[in-house]
Image (tube, rainbow, N blue to C red; front, side, top):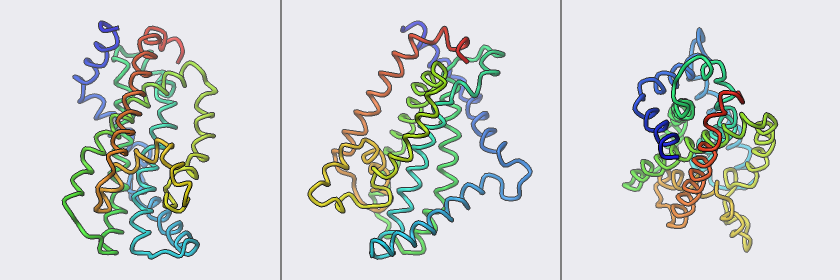
Length: 260
């Protein structure tokens, strides 16, 4: 395992110039010859936040200055995690021609996808900046915790792309299953709602790993400090995912070219 899997990963990381350029190209290619380019992503996020924020603030009857930043950060991070899961399941299958035609190490493709998803996140972050400015969200030192939180999400994304990409290449029914389950998870995750709205059953939200993965970045964005439980659960989930990914990569690495 050491001579194959870790050698592949090490060689992939060394070729950062390749997967960074490919990630940039993937982001730009979808919007080639359009006026706004990738900033159509930002516009779409802004429309989503405006519509959902107005609608749900009326339903929940909450203060707009409190709810809008909370919702915007939640949707921004949810979009990041959803892309990790749904696009991750297609990670290798969508790059079949490149995998067959070039001798690139296989881990280049999860890294490429991670770059693309992170760039989309950065584009969409402009919406949160505007919302924070409009509602005069106070700026504190806790915002620096966004950096380690986002770093952990990036590691999670690369692991998810590797593991789910292998499953998606081996079982072609797997990506549609992921895409079917994700909408349900949206309503089970405190993105549009506060976990304390569950009352005595608030603990149910904490059994959802996505709750903690969102919290380690959303809380600092809102000027708050995440709970230690958020970090422990997020770290444990990411570590467990990587163990599964490495085992799956070890067992399937020599056959991935045939599966795609």
